Image (cartoon, rainbow, N blue to C red; front, side):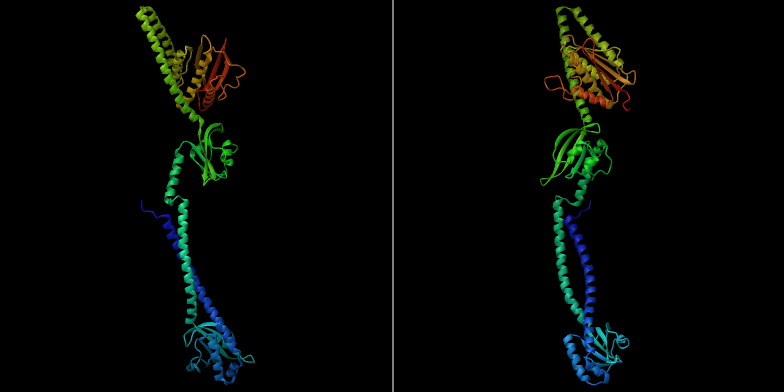
Length: 528
């Protein structure tokens, strides 16, 4: 990559070039207009002088009868000196000079060919012509007698060199001022470049462009939704994840947040300065975990940023971790249980109760064979198998009689997207049944499932104390629990959230003679 010019150098080059171009154009226009104006002003002065001379009576008399010519020459010379004109020439009706600054030119025809307008048409005018003394700006007017006849012409001239010298004096002053303006422009461009550089934290434009592209790439690569507003609540930034989660279209940057997210809690928070930190909100039936952060510019509120995730995705991670922990605990419990059984068998053998040890082994083998047939031959989904195996070990540790109905059958193998919700639903319902029977003398939990129709039906029955009617409407509330330790109250709430993901439903009824039956209905067609 080639070496890039700094912002300051670019400003100096571009603004210097622009100022130079403007100054050249101004100079050309100035020279043209000022020169024309100087010629016009001098021409008017010459014409005014000519008009004054043409009205002198001695001039008219000299032209009429040729008398007093010497006196006229003296008068005209004094007028020429006082006016600053290069010459004042008077000619007769034929254009022959009777006065001229150079006596040798008297009696000769006037030169320049510009007398016709005055001698023929009687006009007074300004002309530019070359005479015997050189190129000059002339004021010409006819001399008219009392009868209104043209009897001569007066020509007052200023040499073009004189006019140019006057113009040059003004042009020098103009160039001095123009140079000062040029220097001020250079200083201003440098100050502007430094100011912009400070505003951009010393970054060059190409560096800012690169940071912008990198920021866009980062925003689009993260899975969290991001949306930002300015101090007026106008959307300034939104990434693709936010558009997908909030179902937003294109072209929302620059619009008010209350228009983009109408009638939502997120819009109310983003357009105000107050709330910050993590919060939970619902948007279009989606539970979102949102973190709000304010933007400050020199201690002044400049807007707010919201980063958010779908809670169901977090629940999947939490559930996966929870199940891994649960599997680990169940394995430890199973190991502990079988260790105790091995100690018991070892003791019977050492005491000589060989038949008792054999009967115990056959009993355990029969239970394992029966449960294994149901789990591995009649239930095909590995997720459901794993959950039941883990809960069976947990039940054995807690001395709960946990039975899987031998008529159970579930041949459907569920997709990976349904794994986490299935684990949450089945695991929490069985755990709640275990909790319900801990206080009874002969705790029993029964599990039955079938998917012969369009749904997976799961029934979990227990012989616990049942559910009090006074709290039946609140058991699905997040945080509500009948336990006194304050650490529970999330099981059924998570179960309902996972069931909603599976488009399923749940029913609770009383068991006979005591306890509770929980029935789950989960459609096999998850795209329905």
